[in-house]
Image (cartoon, rainbow over all chains, first blue to last red; front, side, top):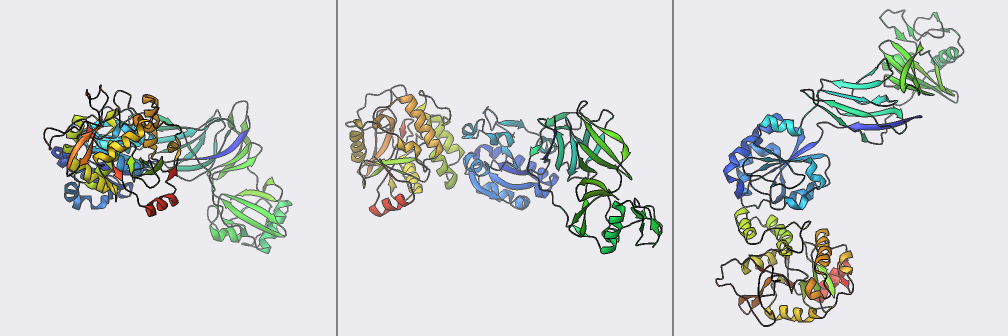
Length: 368
Length: 221
């Protein structure tokens, strides 16, 4: 099966949280418990994650940052409200980026109207007294949790996230916490561990008809598989850098495998020299002063347009070479990997990426 | 019949182009809850008392056996008037004569087409209810679909006082009432009665009718 290019994303902890609190008559005896629980939750959660607070029966929202100073008066204002959730669910219905936590006691009268509605999948009911849900199907309810348990229930972050799949090879990814590794059997895995941010956007290769598998591991060893969100990704390309006339001459000579005069030291270097060590340093200076000035390293694409030569840095460890091949950087070494359809994996060819590797007519890649 | 909608998206009809509009159904719990959410006066204890008289049934799950659970009952006439005020200008309880007039007119009015179901102003929940009622009741005349017959006893104004008209189905409230002759009154004016509900009327001036037409929520049918 051929390889195709696709894109996707993972979102974690970026969901906004909305709280719906029960200030009604049925919850009067647990009012202090609700307020204290909210104090503790708001202390532990990042401020930016709690978007709004609502009260049952009231479609108006309240600012969470004011909860500490205004809780008592808000509860008093809403104490005559009936325990109805529809006024708030109507507002949040299409907000798929929002998790809803409802805290209170006593039945919510109109909850049955939302039975098996998708909004219930992102709503957690926290009962501090009498059940809120009264057995409505699809309504997830927990009873009298501690603040930490409650936060873990709806805001649990994994300890590790791994992505792999048939023919999977990530090309570009947004989160540097993720690292690429390729096993001996050719399986490429993109993995992040022990970070607080597992969110990710990526462009990848995969066998046509396959989907990447995402495995999340939580503390205690619990694992969960999820799918990437399919998205159209438009990765912004940096502005091309025009080579100077002298640099263009070096480039053209390198293509012809001819030695050239270095612009740093004035001495002759062979065509495949990419860095000049005349001034010392571990790596030396990039032979193209324009790129050296920008501090560019890694993959750089050179392309010819008319009588001009441009360069564009390519910010990734992986460069697709076409023909089911890719160049993968591991520190100072860049090797070529080829996809083996029979074995369904990426295997190292016994060569490093040569300088000025031809991608297509007029386009070359170099790794600095 | 000429159709229009209240601000909750539930339908009203009139029998003449400039005639009195009347709710197609008794006021539902769904509509009343919208009033509760904006009003901030009737809380849990009040609503629990109401629901103890006539249990709430979700509009998604009602059957032919518990249709009445959809509608708000047990309310006092003053509470119905408060709801009418909230619903908007011109809304009120019908008079005894108005209610009986509509009843007589609908007795032989056959349901020939149901274009009301496709009006964009109709609340989707109201549409769901109408479709389901048609399926359960299988009405041939509007009198039955409107539940003026086989529904609740409904508050109407009789002079300065309030009285009840209706002939509920026997499984809900056994009775031999003829709404064109009998009036039903609770023994005590402050008693909540489980089978007493209400629907509202609205008088429409010609100018309002044209305004509704331009809003696209008026159909001549």
